[in-house]
Image 1 (cartoon, rainbow, N blue to C red):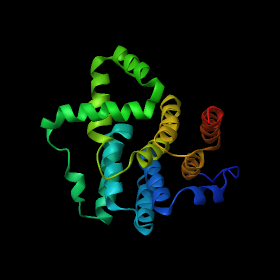
Image 2: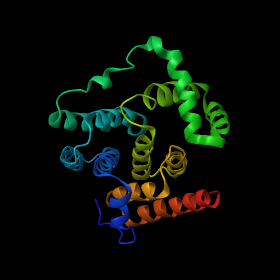
Image 3: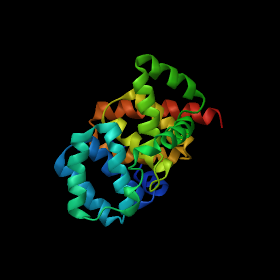
Image 4: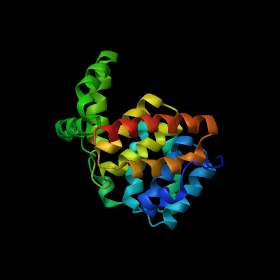
Length: 223
């Protein structure tokens, strides 16, 4: 971690997000960074902040999409050491017979996140490889991100945190807008980025903040 940039308001961070959501976003960022001591620290913070266990179970599952299996498994081991019992709702959507249902709800969720850009996204991803488009909608947005247990707004704030840490600006841009589409107000996104700030060096943080400033300005111009 690095010291926080003083331009990010601590008061905004604490006013816009409740303590469990802040802790969840912090854990998402640590999972993306992949540093085991930091993950353990954020797990302890999640327990201290009384983050609902199902939220963390869902964060772990969706982290596979963003950061892959290795870092997710490291984080899952740290979480299970702190909270050994898997939540009952985390046991849903394990039957591949629900494939058609996953696709249908994935189309809805993906459309909500991307808004007017949804059709273009599907065309662009399909042009890269049709399987990527199918997996994105069915496995990603349907099977995983449409699961019960964690609302879409918090899922998107966690995705913002992870794409910021991973330094993937195109995906970060999409999910900054996605968080707003999911119902977050700009102050909530700003607060989530404040949680991510310590995980980034100064130049990386500045690039993230500049990207967010552009997204926020464009969003507010349409309000």
